[in-house]
Image (tube, rainbow, N blue to C red; front, side, top):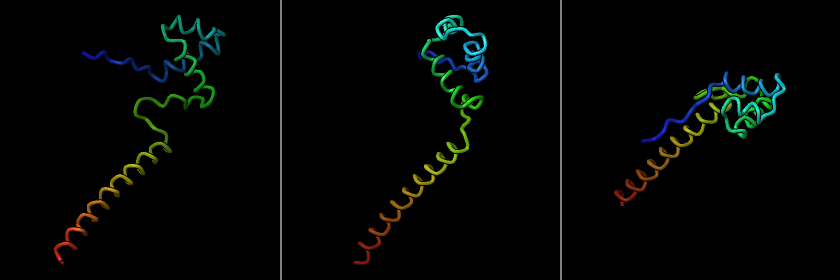
Length: 98
């Protein structure tokens, strides 16, 4: 039986980072109090410094750029499948005409 992976909410992540910045706790102390791995809290703090409040968009919520990239990749994949079908059809009908 697989154990469910704990997913922390964006609000929890921001509050954890605020403990380090606002309360002047060390990362190690804040991680201990929150029962988190120290490295995870360091990564969250790094993301929060780089991206601010937008650092943790949440599960399934992508930035507009990521969403556009996902859509374009799906389009490319679909077009490649269509192209392959047309190539096979062309080869089939060329063989029939001989």
